[in-house]
Amino acid sequence: MSRIAGVFSALRDQGRQALIPFITAGDPSRAVTLPLMHAMVEAGADIIELGVPFSDPMADGPVIQRASERSLQHHTSLHDVIDMVTEFRTIDPDTPVVLMGYLNPLEVMGYAAFAEAASAAGVDGVLTVDLPPEEAEGFVETMKAHQLDPIFLLAPTSHRARIERITAAASGFVYYVSLKGVTGAGHLSLDSVRDKLAEIRSCTELPVGVGFGIKDAETAAAMSKLADAVVVGSALVSHIEANLEHPQQAIAEIKALLGEMRSAMDAG
Image (cartoon, rainbow, N blue to C red; front, side, top):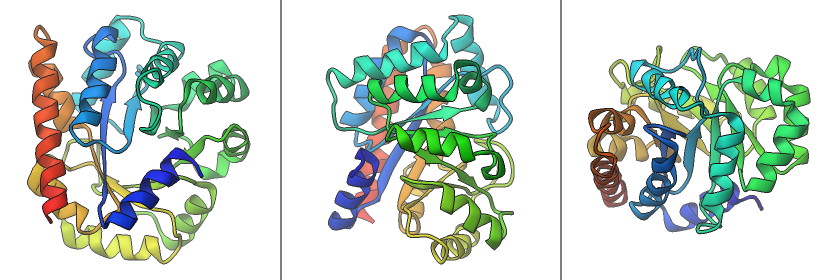
């Protein structure tokens, strides 16, 4: 059983849902990423989504776009991100890590070389925002051959045939984008999410995580009543942006917010 599957199985037995925070690797500096990852686990994170910085993001809103820009100013590469996971694993052998980003850096490195390095480092899953399932066969085969879960996005506009195609290619979990638009934007409609999750679950037994609109403990708790996992990104990265000269303050604020979300989810 993979680390991701193991986490969801254990949480299911406990009647709890996964809390999945996102940060961009190397933001505000490479030295901050590892302490922040460990702090998020201490605050109750079950799985970490670690963003691979990219110059031309298409799904990320302005908050996460700027995080990528800051990271790239330090020349953070895909190799650097993999090295961060290697170092994370020297202290934490259990918390799953999913790399989230765009296809270009993986293609430059090569699927096989990336999969081998990522697996050796202790990466558990890969979410490539701009890789549709129609073009993912070789990618999926290579990732699964190296025990990496290929994770795909589903959208409010995904029709049933597409949901079936995406979930057939995915493993670990699927990520439902709750809003039409980019990260951190729009108003979250719980009724719309509830209806779409019912359709998705009729097509797959994979856990379903929901993101793009989780801003605070209240929305995290409400979403945890519907989804198997709650994904939060922009709300965390905004604390980094507000404390660029004081990274320890950013870590403290992110840890506090995640702790509030974890408590609210568990109390629900």
